[in-house]
Length: 448
Image (cartoon, rainbow, N blue to C red; front, side, top):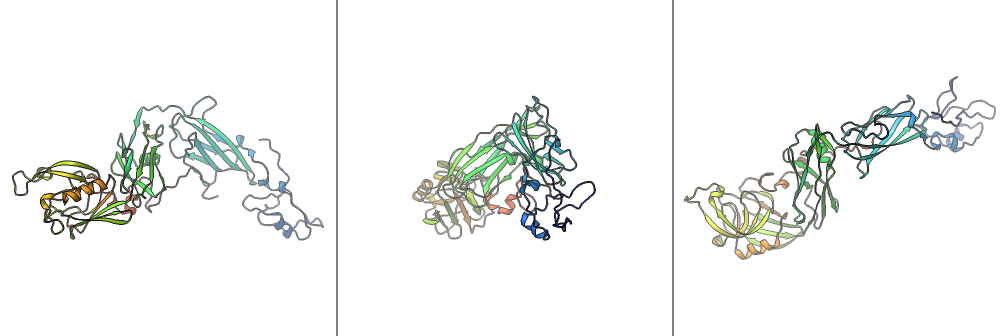
């Protein structure tokens, strides 16, 4: 590499005697004049103080960082293919400092859509290697920063095009719920086309599932099983939040012969903050809207042996008419507990058949006793009002029941019954300390 270097000889005092060497200057050797090291920047003022015998001005050209970055093309090697050849997305990018006196200080690899590729830099700065899969059929710009033994900066910019994946197995994702307006308790879902069990592959998938919201909220994905993830904020969504789900998984290598496929974006809106609290012991249901109580309704809940589930549930849907049979919850037909009833204004909160609904046959017990088989019953008029004033995603919470706590998954949305710290342990991107995995797309050496 032909590169002229400015002279960095030691300054002398008026009598020609070398002044005491300030911190940061290399010791004199017969082979080379003393040079500034990059770790300590010595300003002109400090240098003048140190050289009390002769005040000598120092120009900016004497400092290695004052020079324009040198071309580091011949000082680093890159494992990418030659001109006209596309890189194999199955293989990581690797950049190595060839000169023993140079070290890599920073690397960014970004595709055309602005997605950074994570990577790790060795402690001594001699090598950088990408640590997450590259996208297929993508164009990357790789910017490499270096410094030589004197601290002078170097730069090199590389471009890399990746080819098609050799594997044809695709992993696609379907987001839920569908576009629309939902309540503040609505979790988001991601359904994968194939099971993913390996923790490293799960991390690749999860990192590609994006949730954008305005206003921004703290939230996390949680793996329900090998094919399904749920996303929820730390607390309920703020009212009138705009949410967008999208994926960057398309073209990303997930595992051996498994590549990410396309996904359809979903946009939804969060409505007013509507929370209904049912106190099973007080036989009442209170509805709050944006923090203000707007209605209190006398109700009846599950009787002994059929106690209503405690905990937070989320409205799953509304059905004007439902035919309810005791056989659907395991009650033998013809037994003393058997029933077969037409039910109106039914708001569903579990898939197993728990509703908030009209129960005109139990009006005399509403507000006084629990006589249902697990649902929350109220008068037809009150049920119609409730039906008209709640939507999917609104919160229905039951307290002071002798029933068990709402299931977390599988019977609706019981996601809010897990505390935040435990919820985050279900993410593939958290550590044992419940902290998000660092995005190492830009790293410096941890030690020198």
